[in-house]
Amino acid sequence: MQFKGVLKKMQTEIGNPIQYYLVFESDFLNVNQVLDRELEIEFIKYQCLNCNLDKPIYRQGFCRNCFFEIPSAGDWIMRPELSTAHLDQEDRDLEYEKKVQLQPHVVYLANSSNIKVGVTRKSQVPTRWIDQGAHEAIEIVEVPNRYLAGITEVALKDHIGDKTNWRKMLTNNVDDEDLVAYRNKLRQYIPEEAAPYFIENNKESHMEFPVLRYPEKVKSLNLEKTPHFKGILKGIKGQYLIFEDNTVFNVRGSEGYYISLNIN
Image (cartoon, rainbow, N blue to C red; front, side, top):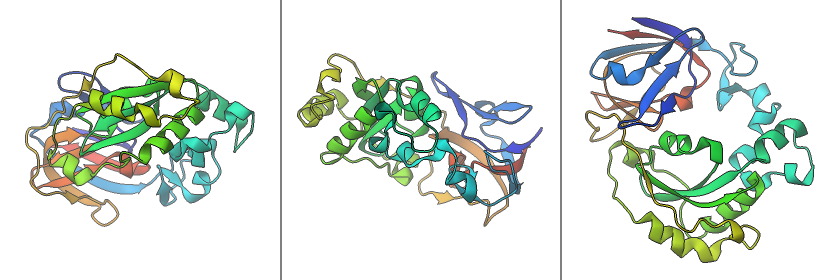
């Protein structure tokens, strides 16, 4: 079985375990169905997710030119507190920015390697948590725009981390935590503008990942340095494929790479 196409982050479907899909231009693969089989990955060329040209990928699946020009790669994507659509102020394309920024957003706690705070659009729950490899998560506030979510995250980052230790997450060296207690402790630090949006009575969400065996140590596959790789797939967590030899492959970190994929 062979697939060819440009890599984009795996699509997911909530379930026990979570279902993962690699989606190509004219085909797709349910990755869960090829656990315990040999995958052969070959890097063929680049293909920017915006202009489709064979140009080196700079960030987020885009070539350098596109990354600094298109609205979907503006600074407010990574730093939501920089959002300005609620003020009717344009960054790169006000119509696009209003569409994305002026919709309900959630500030949440997720536990993947440790407890961290994050922001996502409400429509991306629980997808965002799955992509981060979180085995448990809970919403703190639900606000009407990205700016309010951003300033809340900034305020809470003074009291809890905002980064995931991906190596720890992939070795499953994690503890269960009482996220309700953490959420309640952090309430006092929520900015005044966002305080009315605090969520009082929700419960933790739990995610189960399709992993047959976790690695003891991890070594990362970089397709630029290793353009041809073969390995037995043992699991999927976050946006990573986990192989029998402890190699892990970050699909999302390789967006914009055109590959061939053989299932042996």
